[in-house]
Length: 207
Image (cartoon, rainbow, N blue to C red; front, side, top):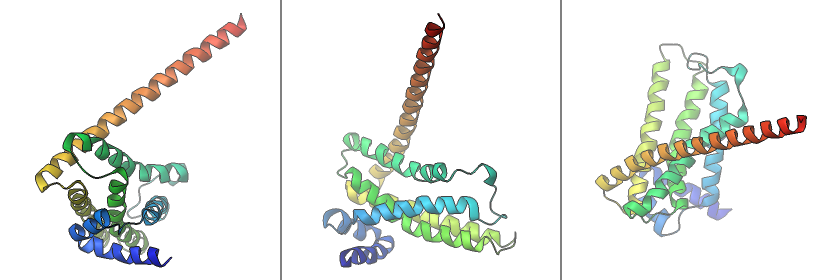
């Protein structure tokens, strides 16, 4: 428990000193995979809470069609897809980071975004339409902070310079598109095959 609290305290150092912090996490064992899992879990739960409890001024979600499980999964899916895509590019760009290292960077980078998103959820229920612009700015701060931490963390764990890291991130998004395309194609083919065999079995049974 003491180690967990120590690692959580170190997380605050990472988000304010990302290059030094992620170096310690990657090369000196200051990371904590349990903390990574908790942050992702909180991110998924906060996505569900935000969908339902964000104030009506900033909430256009159709609550009647809400599915908590789907919202939770789709809240975490982009991060998992990014991690897989980025890891798949390490062979091409000679990155030294492992898959768990990438997940750790994403999770630690998410922490300030979770805080700003929680602030937005709470205050969105009491602000006026004019004041909502302030909350939008808070959201943007959290998003920019997250992106900066991810960029910094990937530079450190893959041992890249800024230019090479930027190229790696662009390639990561391209890889993500390819993965989604192939996954969609695979699901479509399986669905058609199952439909064919089901229709064939039904027709055979009738005869």
